[in-house]
Image 1 (spheres, one colour):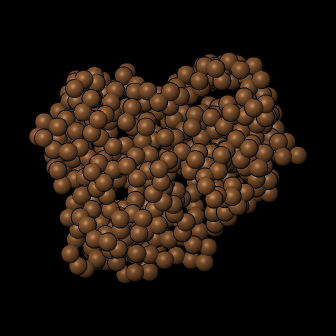
Image 2 (cartoon, rainbow, N blue to C red; image 1 turned 60 degrees about the vertical axis):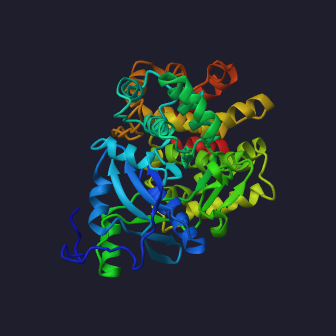
Length: 487
């Protein structure tokens, strides 16, 4: 990483905060920006409030970049809060070590099998669970799962590491660790439990029975907007502090974590002391967040990108898209939700809009648009299906799905290429290119069963509305099509 003007390369590197570092109690798979801006901070604060050994070993499943940036600075990093009035920062020292799974899977398994590790957390994105998003079932044909079944002692997938490490703990007579998913999946604990049990049963049925009886997979809801860190962010932080941090994270002031309080032997940090909501059932919270925040984020990402907006803040600064997203909440999403106890969904929507409009957050539409084939089922399609069953029209959400279909075609409204990042990108592009007109492209993409459940794809009113929306995008463009929805 080169440094920009004003942040010379000979600046001292960031160092961990003074004082004794915590002993390890957590392994985290997928050490990206989100966990470091969210869960890691909660763990550090919980230890400051109530003690305990909950230091984190981070694991990068594929690339060494994160390890290479963090290790020279003792795995410390700066969390930079991007408020409307400016930036504030804190140095976080809860991460003790970073491992790279593809380089040394044995080191990762040894850490996970250590009885001192009581929790394994994950942020590997929706695609990292090697499942079918439309059903939640393990995809046995996924190349990583095929590999892990053939080479169980050297796994490459997150489910493969979980199963092999739990197998080692069972063989050693140790208790299992709690698996705490922090990804945006509905009923994420149930989904990860199902994937792990399916894979374990394919390896050894008795292992699956032990995990089912002794393990814990609490569901969670996580919320904090964490835009990607840019070189200019690193340079600006260095100028402000006189210290070079090669791995800072940027985040908004807001944060929320709702966790089902179900841990193996009750072993967890004192999360309640630092604002985590410990509940019996996370479902209403996750539906609220997945559909109201993540669903509208995706809708704004595809439509905003097609309309030429680089960020979410720029998109909602456009009065058409501001009215569009407010209509999505009021007319299409909130009517399909049961609010969590004591929550006013209208007030939650208003707070979301303020968060989207925060000029300090540069959350790129292209970044949010990644991996749409994995995100649409839980973020948007579930709401559409429930509204269809209730006889409620969903023109805005249908337009968002049509915008995704236009986006994965790989060409924007100006004829420029779109860099589509999606595990199904090649297949989606081929389907789009191989069909003619709005009706043909919609029909071809509705056939992707990993995304669209057969019952929804076959619904005549949905197909007709989606075709009409896609045609509006072709003829009028994204902004005018959104304006047509809001009137």
